[in-house]
Length: 256
Image (cartoon, rainbow, N blue to C red; front, side):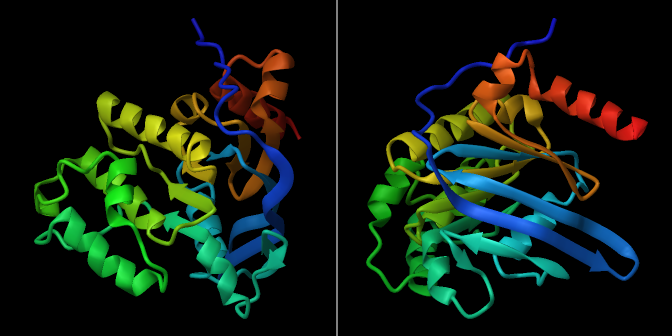
C-alpha cells in the first residue's frame, strides 16, 4: 500500500518571493546535453526538494548555482540578483553542502570549523551555536576521522552554515545513511527552516524520504524539468506520493 503524502504545515512559512530563479538553463559537454532549458523558482522561506534519479542533472544545476560551472546559456538569480560572476556579495547569503563533503580527518570538529570559518567568512562566527544546531556539541573535540557517516553529514551541513546563509543548498544530504541517520538529517532540516528561518533547497534521488519534509517539489529527469509544484496542491489534486507522481510524469513523457 502506498504511503500518503504527509502534511507538514510548520516546515517553514513560505514567502512567495523567489529566493532562487532559474531561467532556460542549458549545459552541454561536447554533444551531450546535460541541462535542457531548465526553468524553475524556489520560494523564499520553505523547503524545496529538487528531485530526480541519479544523472538527471541535479548536481550540475547546483554547481552552476554555486558558480563552479558556467552554463552554456540561461540565467540564475538569487534574491533577484543575476549571477553573472560580478555580484560576488550575493554568495554571502548562500550556504552549500555538496555530496560527500570533505574535512580534515585528523582534526576535531571544532578545529575544522575554526579553520574553515577563517577561509569562508569575514564575519564573526559562533561555532558553538553551529555545533549545537547540528547536534555535535558533545562530539566537538573528537577527531572527524572517528565520526560515523551520519555525523559527517551533519558536520557538512554545519560547514555550510559557517557562511551564516539565508539560503541553504544541500546535495543528497541523506544519501548512504541508515534510518536513524536519515531521521536526524530530516529533523535538522526542519529545524533550520522553522527556527533559523532559512530557505532550504534539497537535491535528492530519494523521493520518498524528501517528500516527508519538503513544502515544494521540483522534479527533473534527463535534464528537463517535468514539474514544479506546491506539495499541498499536489495532495489536494489526489497525488498520494511523489514517487507515484514521478512515475506518472515519466509515463506521460514517454507517450509524447
